Length: 260
Ligand code: SF4
Image 1 (cartoon, helix red, strand yellow):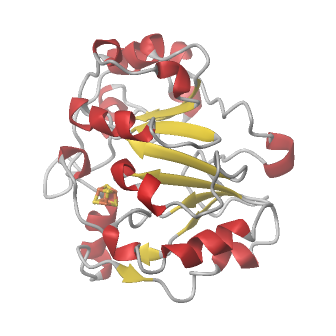
Image 2 (cartoon, helix red, strand yellow):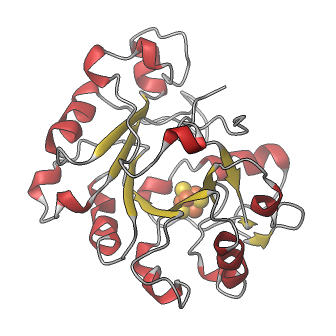
């Protein structure tokens, strides 16, 4: 299918709301907050979307859909209408919904009644950019889901995964990426090192599929890359040229998320 998202690991984005509240340092330079300055909205107000709320029902081709790129699907402000979103997901078995949250401790209380061991068309993940976020992995491991994933982006600190008591075999997919941003001003990038990528890859379970999304602005500058976010895989060091998808994912049915 045609990709409507620039995010390398998905085909399209779907937002049931826009707006969020920061949870910790991992959110420091959140791009939704940055964009709010450009488009003149209040990033702290979680507002239900109107025209795009039913988007998956209108998408004809089977798609990988990053669910809630401009909010957090498990934010409390969405509690009153999340069931409507679950209903749309239920009615779209042709799509695969990638739900990424920084509030995994709220997931189990807010799943649909017929969730069981997870729906075939839903992947659930959490973001961890530093040791601050490790508790989110513990919370995610308490959730039954067909595909469980971690986004180590923006990676702004070296993480020693093995020093935490985590059953890493339960992580099906890991995305890794450095931070994008400006050198100065309110929305900056934080440094990232190649060794931090290598360390995560070495520590993750061999059964975890890995997707290196981007090296981030710091490394892009340092390595003089042509892509300013360091997102061109051909410019990565050989050992980081990895873009795997979860094993249960069938690219021939959906198509892989490739930047356009
Ligand atoms: S949880 Fe996500 S959307 Fe919300 S403030 Fe943090 S980075 Fe931004």
